[in-house]
Figure 1 (cartoon, rainbow, N blue to C red):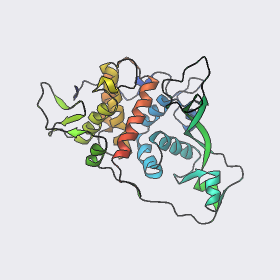
Figure 2: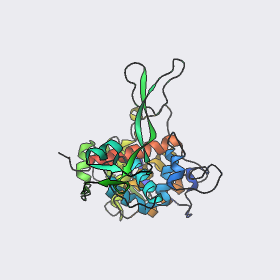
Figure 3: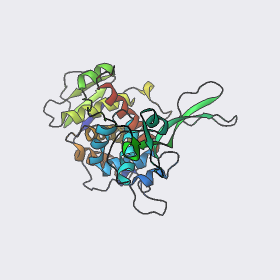
Length: 302
């Protein structure tokens, strides 16, 4: 059973629990801009998570502008456009804009997003642990940064009306889609706000941030913390990492939907990772679980 409690927190504001190298440039200076992210050709998700934690206001802006993209790509797109001094506007590839009757202005440079790339497996090497399922012909897919997208403001041509509707998120819809059941809360010993076991969660009705705890406990289920057979890694995770992963998901979802509890999430993560660092694979798992929970709670698009 995974239970969330009012864990003692390390009341600091610098989220270096991601590791001292997260959010730094090659010269060791503090980073956090889109240029820092693009410098990592293979996509350092810890750096992106670091930026999400240090620039929470950008998350909701990114979601409203780019909700059709993965959460990691939403943030990447927003950061790069803001870095260029451009507003958050629709993005598309060079050819996609041309099909809409618009053309990329001369001299404009594309922004980079993650996209799946098919890679041929070498005979003497296995696919990376985080690679997608192997395909035919000894290939596997990896997500890598590719500069293929341009903003509306980088183009000219026929008039274009941007979509202004931001999809809502519904907890009941998400839990049904993910096969997660909310059961009556059992008053456990200690100051628990909620718990998760198997594919069920329980939420303390007196919890003032019930939505955040719901995200946290749903994350435990989606990350496989409540069932060893569901784990995506060969090695068992420590309680410290499990709690940090689940709260990382809760933070992202609160930030995307502009809900209260973001500061509490930051402190909760810091409390569990005092003196430790969050592995890169954990950052990838956090974004992956947050994506699944977010998509599950959105209305079906026809």
